[in-house]
Length: 513
Image 1 (cartoon, rainbow, N blue to C red):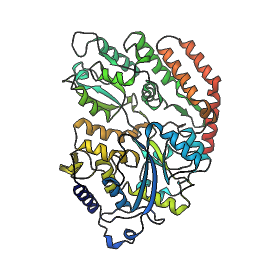
Image 2: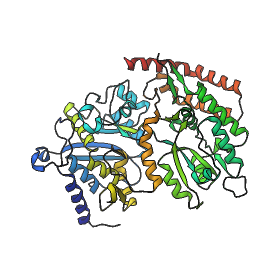
Image 3: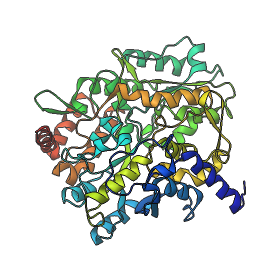
Image 4: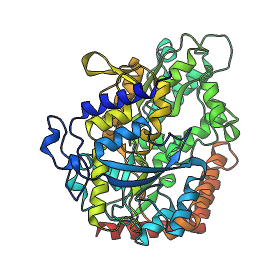
């Protein structure tokens, strides 16, 4: 869809007129107020000099043209002058490290929660902003867990690039489950019986033994997407780590819920009820097999994946009907909470010189969560990317154009699907996913070690994680037995696991104080 420059500037005029007063972020003003009903003549901020805001953000896809329509709309509303440096995602962390080492940083840096950034924070190179947060109405309105999940040594050094915490969901073929009269599993025994039935009883009725209840890929136990963690949490287990009232830490893999889950997968593998090639199967290949009808339940997805899967699978299996449900166990819904962010936006002391500048930047970010800016980031411009529908909904007019022009800003700035944004009119399944992800926060079990610092983990964390993950695979495929598993846990402890536990306990106690 090609547009002339006049058409593009008409679109900008439309959105800025709808915004009302273009309240700025000059000075050290507290939380921004809603722009609804405000008059341009009522405020001095409208005439204030725009605040210079330099930002570095990762690039995925084409770099937006400088001074494009979306950027102009953001600048106009927030009374800023943006200078955005786009860095290829593949080299982003490396570029950030170079910037920090050379002390050549923008005013806002999107950084990932990784050991090098944690060390930079502990080196007093970023502003601590916890005391300011309450002064910004939109930032302060978000669930405190989002901020807890990016703290370093108990303090807040940035604003999360928000993502839903309770995203994990079970995605399944409703048509096949219904045809076989099966209910979704809740106990581990349920999981065994349902998977066995779906694998052996030809659910698609094609006369072939070519379907699994569930499938795994080689990253089945990797990080926040671990299906072992998800299932163990649903059974009452901990999310990666548990901590009791006395501050004693326990890794998930020695808890009874996790060990029982591990035994379930060992049994499924032994009886050939799950794919035997999972230790070498790439995730993309497993997804292709699922979308060709080879499995009934997908246990490594998130709620909003289901609608996309539905679109793809009907091209191969025209009768397929997908559905989603939160992870649930004997005690009800329990979801392994994710980090709730895709990195965070931090303010380097090298370029942000004083509290006034910090507050200007916080005001800028706070305004991005106002209705008009949330609408722009999540839906684009009315008449260009979306249009109004009935009952307060909106629907896409050009999603491809939105992905090219707006998505880079949506993905890197701050916004929520369910905060100050009109809901999308979409398929019933897609709308169910949009609703389920934020609701999942109510059932999310947090990882208490998520923001704790440990020298052992900084030095050897990846090695320790790989060691125990490999042992899990060995156990499932029968290369080691119960005694062998106990030996692997003992090796993990000796290799640094016991030190890791002690350091987490010390960091936890320090943060509590």
